[in-house]
Image 1 (spheres, one colour):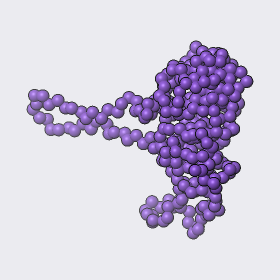
Image 2 (cartoon, helix red, strand yellow):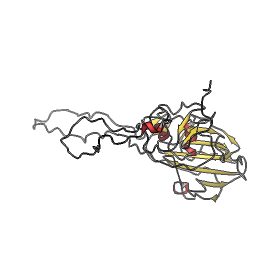
Image 3 (cartoon, one colour):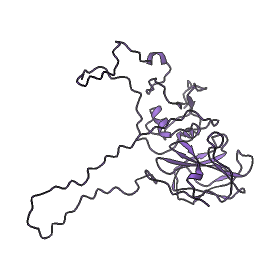
Image 4 (cartoon, helix red, strand yellow):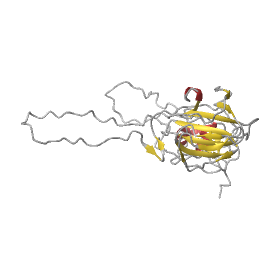
Length: 298
């Protein structure tokens, strides 16, 4: 049951979740990494958002964006009380003064599963939440120099097998590393990338032509909730890259499905377009990038 008191019109900088939206599609609309949205809104599981929920879609500017709504903004403004600026450069001063209010941090362990977006496409302020994965760098092989002993017959030193697999996997998606890209269709490019007018490239084609996954990954969104995209498929390749395939006449995959590079995932169409074509995008940490810089030359 949806909450009767859910707001109908979003406040500036916010978005009201509509039925069928996912965090991935909402992030796509606002050109933001889905983990950034999750962090701004204190979402532990990106798969769980509800219709009627109000989400922050612009970076919090100095206000405390805690888990509770920011309705009472005035009460959250931090103003200097004792004229003592917190930046005392006295190193020995270990006074336990109350720590300054820090915006709720981004719990970057949020993972996979889509949930977000059905709104008119707009380019809201993009803020890249660089959260370096604290990969604990193991100390380089510390050679324990033992006193010279007479050589032992077979003292085979078995080093601890702490080998991290070449590409860590999360639900069929490589976590790190670059993507091996291939063209999603055979048509020629009729519209190139333009950061303000075209967030990807458009390829010619006929209705029914195969639309192929440009890289291996997992389908995180299938639907027609984003205006201007028609029937859309979004594939997550790793923690950095997503790709989008728009205007399809038929979608052949479902959310959560793992796909291989070159696999047919849809049929080319003209849904929400003026002609049959494939609109293809690559997003790096939520931000659109020129696909021609990633696709192989042909």
